[in-house]
Length: 183
Image (cartoon, rainbow, N blue to C red; front, top):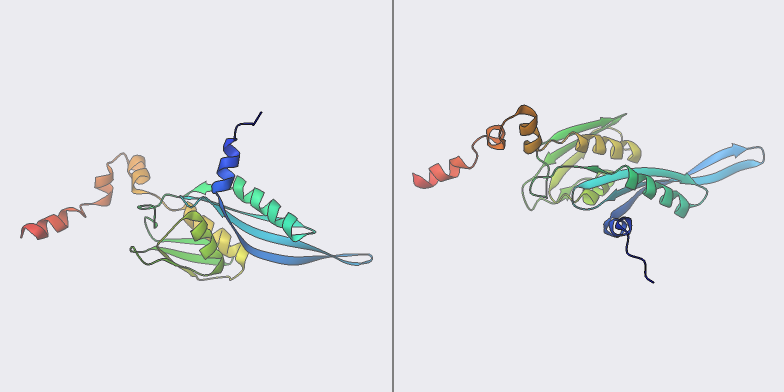
């Protein structure tokens, strides 16, 4: 009798995982050095959810597996404008890592370096401009990017907090082209 496919199995198959960094670490013991590996992994669904994790083990595949499990547990939802870019520009800081993320017009693509690119692609952002202003350490860059993404607010959530309508928050952008067309 075939068992029904569990929800977790379906979620795992849809996830995008990206290995950002693998580092060889050494522990000095009485007989010499014991080598191990640490891995940094980013996991996302390509639809607005992303998480990161780090794992350590004596072998690379085991470290990657541990990091992937931790990343799946730490996933957060990020509101996206039109499913392709951020709602507004944002800065994130973690330790010495400083990142700047800017919303971009359609067709721009993902302009970001290394670890930030992995996070943004796993998230599913299509158009964004990003710049690392501080540390180039992959761990700090990923964590600073995640801090920045958690600070993104959608107009709907801001309107709900203030007890207003979305149109009051956004202003009257759509009215300008209609006025120009009539004139």
